[in-house]
Each structure stands twice: as C-alpha cells, then as structure tokens.
Image (cartoon, rainbow, N blue to C red):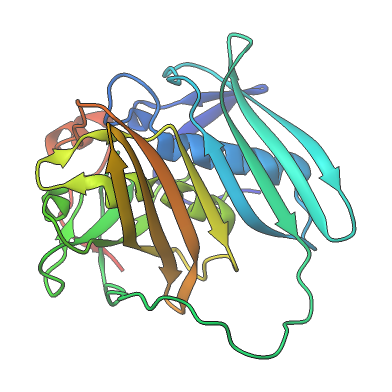
Amino acid sequence: MSTSATRAAYFGIDGDRYIPSPLTKGPWGDQLSGTFIGGLLAHAVERDAWDADFHPTRFTVDLLRPVALAPMRLRTTVVRSSSRLRLVDSEIVQDDTVVSRASTLLLRPGDHPPGKVWSTPVDVPPRPSRFPDTGFAGGMAFWLYGADLDNPTAGPDFTPWQYVGPKHGWVRELNPLIDGVDLTPFTRAALAGDITSSLTQFGDAGLYYINPDYTLTLSRLPDGPDIGLSAVTHYSHAGIATGVATLFDRRGPIGSAMATGLAHGGFRAPTLDEVEKLGGIRPNGAAG
C-alpha cells in the first residue's frame, strides 16, 4: 500500500526493521509512546495475518517493557483459525527480547439477530468541524472536552482533563504511521485506544498513572479519520487503577476500551515549541 501524504511518517523501514522517528517519543521519558506501540502491533496483524472476511473484535496490548527509540522487528503468529474466528498474536522485538505484544481476535460477520439490547447511554460531544493541524507528537490532533463542553481545547494542552468530572475527546491522526503505508481504520482505532488511560485516569492533580496495557473492543471499524472517546468509569485503590471509555465515530458508538494503571509520576506532554523542534507543525490553522 502506498500513501500520498506529505507529512513525515513515525516509522521508516530498513529491511525487516522499523526505525522510529524522534516524534515517537512518549510523555513518560525517553521511550516509545504506547500509542505507537499499539499502532505497530495492529499493523503487524494487517501485514501478516489479515483476512478481509473477518472483523477485528478485540485487540489487547501488553506494554511489557519500555520500548527504546531504536530499531525493532515485528513478529506474528496465528494461534487459532476456524470458519468463525481467527486469533493472532503479534510482538515487537528489540535485541531478541519481546518488549510489547498484542492479542487480536477476529470474528466473521453474519446475519444480525432481531431485537434490541440495553446499553448505558453515553453523552457524545459533537464532532468538531475542524481539527488543529498538530497535536501530541506533532501528528495526533486532539479536541479535549472537560468541564466546558461548548469550548473544547486543542492538544497537546491536557488541562481540560485536570478536574473531577466527565471527560471526552476527539482525535485525528494526521501523520502516516509507517513510511509508504496508508493508515487503515483498524490502525487508527489501535492508535486511539491507548488514549483511554489518560482520559479515564486524569484527576484534579494531574495524571499519576501509567498504563501497562489496554484492550480495545470494536463492533465495527471507525468510519472516517475522526475517533471520539468518552470516559465511563475510573476505579482505583492502593496505586492501582482501571478505566473504561466508549469509542465512537461520526455515526455513533463503535466499541469500548479499557486500561489498567500503576501509580507513577513524571507525565509531561510536549509543549508546542518541543513539537516544532521534533519536526511537528505549529498550529497556525486547522485541518478540515
């Protein structure tokens, strides 16, 4: 697959190795952001084990170790394949060590059953008519909704989530994940899923939980580039947290995401000056 995008990709390819750009640095120190780890693991499934007759229903990422800003390889294994389901493991390997992994369950769609099933209503903020032309790492544009639902804030300013109350966000990835490869709906969903941790675990003192995993469940793939998230729950005790969010697109809810968290200080989103120095674009306008 090729892309006509002119924006810089997060990863280049050298043989069978994926080379991260400086833009992939996460907010917890000199290591790869979990957002891009999930994107790479989803890409591995699409690269090696995709079947258009199946739908990715559950995607679980385990962030086993810090992923260095260094070359890495991707491995996949089809654990189970039948007429109705396919289970795929994918791994990121650095120096012969598995640093992150994912399990992806794909199911074959069929006839939809009759009747209705109850679900908790979720307040979905309207999809913004425009997006900032930069954001976290210079590429993922955010509109963040906190106490004032009528006036969202553009990322990478996360202060709207620093309060006790409902939190929402819309995101749009502007950069290619991998040089020469188009972003797919599944990869976009995987990139957005990691945001669940920050969304559900931000408090009035800031973000003091780092997530060792996240799980994304999808009844369908997102329609279009924009993905929204609404925090549903947060529970925590003795430095351990769990959070759940609803995911939606321009047509409505598409699934849920869950992240666990461990108490950990040091979160710091990049400033706009830092984004610009890393090669991102300063937000002088908006992407429609």
